Amino acid sequence: DITVPLPGKTRVFTVSNQKGGVGKTTTTVNVAASLAKLGARVLVIDLDPQGNASTALGVDHHAEVPSIYDVLIDDFPLADVVQQSPEFDTLFCAPSTIHLAGAEIELVSQVAREHRLRTALEQFIREAEEPYHYVFIDCPPSLGLLTINAFVAASEVLIPIQAEYYALEGLSQLLNSIRMIQKHLNPPLRVSTILLTMFDGRTNLAHQVADDVRAHFPAEVLKAIIPRAVRISEAPSFGQSVISHDPSGVGAISYLEAATEIASRGAAEREEATAEETTT
Ligand code: ADP
Ligand code: MG
View 1 (cartoon, rainbow, N blue to C red):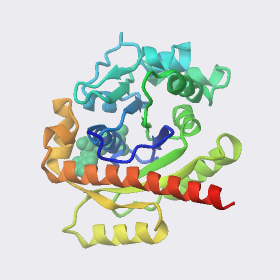
View 2: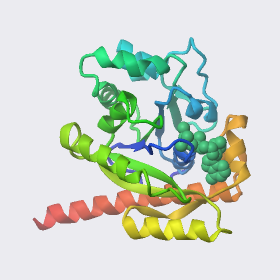
View 3: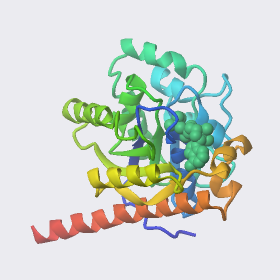
C-alpha cells in the first residue's frame, strides 16, 4: 500500500555530518525503511567502510560479496551489487565491505574520481526496471573522497544532529564543505533536511539545543524529533530496522513521522515548482 506522495523523479540524499556517532547510519536505515514501509521503492548505498548500514539492514557484506567498492574502483554496474533487504520488498542496499577502507586512497589515482558514484547511480536509475523513489547514501564521518562522491551523486543533504552541547559546533565546517562542493562539483546540491536525533526530553540542554538549531535553520529542521531509545540502538543486532523490530514503539513512530514529512515536503515543493511554471 502506498501511503505517502511519491516523487516523480528519484530523490537522492546524502546523509552527512562530520561527527561520528551522531546517528547518520541509524537515520539512513530507519528513514529508508520507513519510506519502504510507506510504499516507496528505496535504495540505501553504504559508503562507510564500517558497513554498519549493511549490517543493520540484514544484508550480506562479508569480504567476498560484490560491493560498492567494486562499483567505485572496478566499474561494476551498481545493479550487480544491489541486494534486496530481507525486511521489505521495496528496500534495497548496495553493501559496503572491508575493501572499501582502501578505496579512499585508491580513488586518488582514478579518472573522474569525484564523479564515480554519480555516474554509476545515474546509469542504475536510468536502467532500473521499476523506478526508485529514494536513494540514501550513508557516509563515513570525514570529508574524504568517499563523502565527496556522495555529495556529487546527491541532490539533497540530510543532516542528523544530536541534540547535545556541541551540536552546532562543527556544523559550520560541514556547511563550508557543502559550499565548496556546490561551487566546484555539484551546484544544485542543497541542505534540504535536518533531523534532531537522540533527543533526551528530560534535560533542559536538549530543549535548548533543539531551539537553537530551529532558530538557525527554520526551514530545514523537521518537526519530527527522534528520541533516545534503547529499541533504536538494539535493532541492528537483530539485522532489522526499528520499524520492524519494535513497530509500535516511539522509535518506529518518530522515524515514520520524519519519513512522512520528508515525502510530503518534496510533494509540496513539486506543486510550488509546477505553479511557478504555469504562471511564468
Ligand atoms: P553515526 O553513523 O553517525 O556514526 P550511528 O547511527 O551509528 O551514528 O549511531 C551511533 C550510536 O548511537 C549507535 O550505537 C546507535 O545505535 C546509537 N543511536 C543512534 N540513534 C539512537 C537513538 N535515537 N537512541 C538511542 N541510541 C541511538
Ligand atoms: Mg555510521
